[in-house]
Amino acid sequence: MQRAQRKLEHINIALKTGQQRKSGLEDVSFVHQSLPEISLDNVDLTTEIGGLTLSSPIFINAMTGGGGVETEKLNRELAIAARETGMAMAVGSQMGAIKDPSQIASYKVARQENPNGILIGNLGGEATVEQVKRASDMIEANAFQIHVNVIQELTMPEGDRNFAGILSRIEEINKSLAVPLIVKEVGFGMSKEAVEQLRSVGVSIIDVGGYGGTNFARIENERRSQILDYFNDWGIPTAGSIIEAVNVSSELSIIGSGGIQNPLEMAKSLALGAKGIGVAGHFLKLHKERGLDELIKEVNYIHEDLKFIMTALGAINLPQLRKTKMVIAGDTFHWLTQRGIDCSVYAR
Image 1 (cartoon, rainbow, N blue to C red):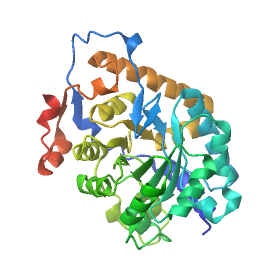
Image 2: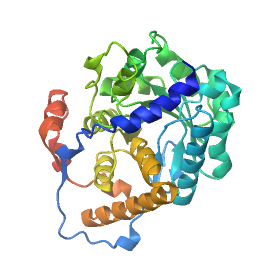
Image 3: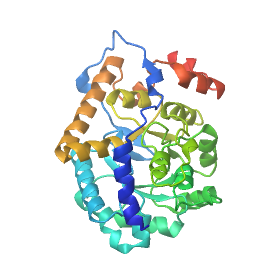
């Protein structure tokens, strides 16, 4: 099957299967503050991720590209939404354009529509330094994602089966790249051990891509004749993965993603220690069902609601939000306790 056709299949199956909505964030509760002592007008959503200053902690996470005219139109409108709302945007894997130059336009359109915005390039862990540099130059990237997706590749009928050497390639890319490097999971979560491995080779920005959102095992199983159903429920839920990652080192910039849809889930993720929130499937569905104008309205509502929640918690900015008190219960509590993380510190 041609890569472009596969990309279109991924979009259509993702929309059909939806998201798991099992991110673990339902186990996290804020401790109410009756006397917040701040004004809504002074709440600031600015965040810093690996040297990049962003006016919004929310960004459009990697979705697609390389699917011809249809994905070019999608990336054009997502870039417009990013431009109009002050969000950063990551494009989908650019390997399609590396292997087929006719697909370059479906990525470059993002920079054309958002010439002054923050754009993030994307390739998989199999990429070489030279390919990453080409992909970065293609969209004049401000940062670059290397995605790791072992479970998706194993489930994909035509996927990779050899994952040796990924860490050393990431190390080489990180040393050679002129912009900040982000290593991103695609929906199965990052453990503290994986985060420590990445930190050991110099990576400082990690997108945990937790279980709970778009499930690429289910997507690829839809394309298989012999179903690998044991991978459908595989992974670390987003809440637990964020906490595992931030407990490795305070020097890391952790990005939360994986089924995070509404402002309350975003606020919880930021309070747990994420510096940014990546949203893909939710924005894709909104755009598909309601169009560009409604997507822009929804993002503006999200920003407004985030400020309301922060005001209720007495947090004038994101560093203060990370100091708010939370109680962790349920499966997330049990997971983290067995993983050696003391959840009571969040309540105290």
